[in-house]
Length: 193
Image (tube, rainbow, N blue to C red; front, side):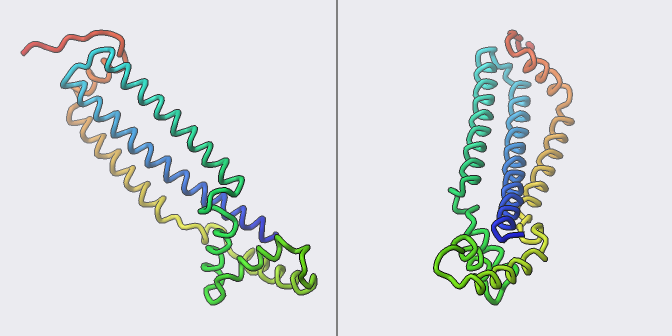
């Protein structure tokens, strides 16, 4: 496998890991918002206009977030994002695989990219093949840092458990509030004390 192809593979895995982290963060925020508005509805009995505004704002926010993610992915695929540039990925690979010569992977990638320039073709081919053999022996999963994703997953799981406990404690109020949110266009009168 060429160095360029290996870099793309590592970049795709890194992007996937970061997208999953962003997804779990967005999920945590959405769960918190839903639980908060359910609890607030159980107390304040929002009017239909306010509920409609909240739902529209939430939907527009989700659409904007989705659009920004697509733009982000397009920039990554066109090598415009410095965090995911081929040079940055080659540097990361160099640090993981070649701790003594951290720029070896970057140098090999740059030589491979510019192989038609004024270099000795035999020497460049030998160097590129040697570096390529070494990096191809490493699993790309070992190069990508998954610690952030693991922390975000634990945070999301903890938040979900807290929300389940809160909704269980306020079960009756939550059920009624959920019904009122489901029928957001109807007017409900607050109970008299």
